[in-house]
Image (cartoon, one colour):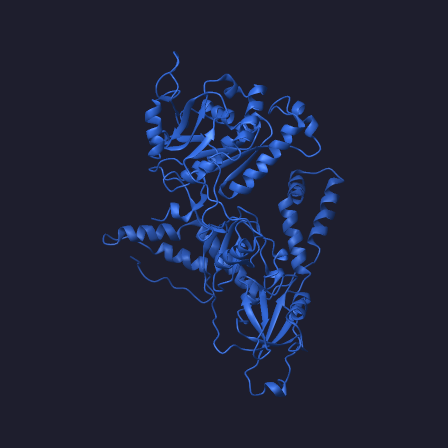
Length: 586
């Protein structure tokens, strides 16, 4: 309870009032806990400091403060130079140290910039009377202040009346922030110049070149919508887009360029053809135009019909592949130093082109175009199974070796999916450790029942990786590392596994190809032809499957690649990652 209300005057500061109020708080039996809490809050030193700062700022506001000088940073430099020219006592040494800190220099520099500028825009006077031809219409004079940024609005010519109409307002742009320009407004003048007879591209140029103050004479739309419909949707781009190469865009300068894999925040889908979006991670407040899914699909379908675009592909599973490596217990597969094994890998991959595992083009009436994928951020909950880690690699990447080293260093965190095979068990092998040994009939039955994500044949024996073997690892709360042919990704990229896909590709420097074999520890004795195959392999894989890749690891040498992969795997467990919305929403 409060004994009696403290007596304060109009001149009593907030921090003084707070101290008086605190001193009069005495807990009673009925409200002891509440009053103790209140007293603790009022007694906080940080709150008292804030009150004092508030009072000081109020005093400065009364006197309309102006900067004492405009060159505080120069004065500080002169003082520091003077101090350095003579013997210093302790206080002078401390002052010199303070004046030398980059933070204080930055504060003084900011002070000088502010002190030398006037931030209030100087606007020309309003016209006394509107034009005679506008007397019967509601006229709005809008004055905006913009820097070098675009106005953030696009215009169109009304086909019936010939009027110049505001077609869209870009979220975060100067027009949007002002709240004074709306979609449907008719634009009559720009900075006193009549623009009704100019082409839209000429008007856009005038608007973009105008700096500082810009005055618009507008006939307001009949029904103004003060708020754009917000759409906080996040999309992963599955294709590259360059607005300046797109003749269909209503305004190339307003377009948002992006690359495959970029995360886009769509802020409005009000226009069915052109959405407004920002790239996640950028500081630009203004949104840009991107083609909508429906519009992009429509024109891709048209291009495919006209023969200028190949039909989209849709990989099928399970995937049949030629086995390109020796058994997992082979030394060549573990240490990556067997050149003959690498050459054999090149030959077998060349032979595999056009094999039954290759993706087939679906029915042209139901194509699946790669445009956008709706995503959200996801972090594995402690009660959930770990995410599956899928490694795919181009020629020369040696992902089996990389995977084995990760597991060897952290066997408690990571494990392999034990493969199945029809070959006979060797004397040193154990069932369920190196392989699951089953009969050919059982293997073929499992193929028929769709239990393998991929399978193949090597020396008349069948080998395969099953869904069950992956589940065994994940059920033990370990991250399962699998390296598969990229055709198998469609079977793994599901809400059940929530895979994190890493694309490993060798780093090959232009102009250094002849030295690659001797300077890199990836392998020795690789020919120029092999290097060309590696480059083409990486490009093909990136083109066909890059939209599914979460991380690209450029492998320069085994040690650095191992360290980089370990950092990436740790982030998957501790930091939110972008995943398809369908994996999270149920």
